[in-house]
Amino acid sequence: MRKRRGNKSGWIERRKRADGSIDFYGRFRVYAIDENGRELPTKIPAVLLGNSRQINEREARKQLELLVKDRPGTQDQPALALRFEDGVAKYKEQYLKNVESSTKRLYESLLENHLLPALGKLELVELERDYDPIQQLVNRKFHDDKMAWWTVKDMHTVMCSFFQWAGKKYRLKQNPAHLVTLPKRPLKPVKKLATPERLAQLIKALPLQRATMVKLESATGLRIGELQALKPDDIRWEEKSIYVHATWDQDEKDLAKRYKSVKSTASERVITLEQEDLDWLARYLEKYGKPPGNFLFRSRSGTPLSRRNTLKRVVAPAAKKLGIEGFSWHYLRHWHGSYMAARGVPPEDLRRRMGHASIITTLQYYVHVVDGQARQAAKVASQLVPLRPEEAADDVA
Image 1 (tube, helix red, strand yellow):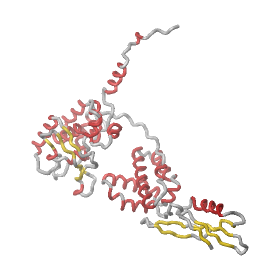
Image 2: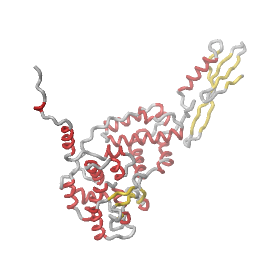
Image 3: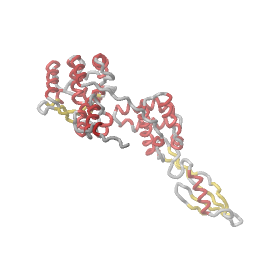
Image 4: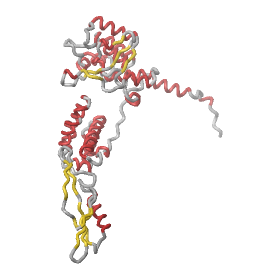
């Protein structure tokens, strides 16, 4: 018996009969993988493809290729009898532990509440071959459960991340999440931002500590975690600026880990301030003191003021009384970006000030049309060709 060896696509064995003809047998291995990514090759019995009186060896080879083409575990695709829920457990253990804590919490929440209940019992190989269960899940969450489009997008991002990780570890051929079509993003209502005069009224209505927080936030566009993490030593009085290098993660369970570095190199920055803003800080520190190493906006326990309690109990009710809708700390970040752009600040300078890695993020998500800007744009467009209606020629009969 002569063997013709091949690779994972199989090989042909020739077995001679008593009458001198030759039977062609196809042989190939099925490559299985355990949950730790170790390959476990297993040879299967020979499959009779035909006799030399009926087919030649080239035709036998073509039959073998068709036989192994779509079979899991053949060629370069290992068979993986691993369920989605088991893969997610490994994903959490080996991948999520290394990502930023807020991202980790978001991913774990989406996995536990939405993805595992729907896909947990399915095998990864099944999902790789047929992405329809993933597509149905996305459609159901958006259309039937009325999940917000951004949450659906986040859920899709988690699936892309998981299958990218699983593809490297378990050698899947494709990422099925990449084949999913997201629903069309609905048009968002135009964000109505308060005028500078209205925001000034809000600041005047607040106690000094909360008023200083809102004033500094509106003047810098800081993320609320960055504002909470500020310390008196971060104020550079001579340079008229503040140094942003840390953030306060209020959702971190371990208190010792809440104060941490900013999330990216672009987020570490120096923000220039006007003398008026420095005067606000000087007055604030004169009243509340400057304990070395402590936080600028601190509670009685020495930790930063709670962003939620401060907003819910003091700032948001005052904003509502003044007719400012949808007020939040992040609202002030959008307010800062929009009015800075409206006042002619170059986009690149605004990007650096807000701590974005990409100018696209700044312009696409944080710059909105503010009061009077649309009217000004219409006036400029009309004046490009300054003609009055009576200057037009009469129609020729």
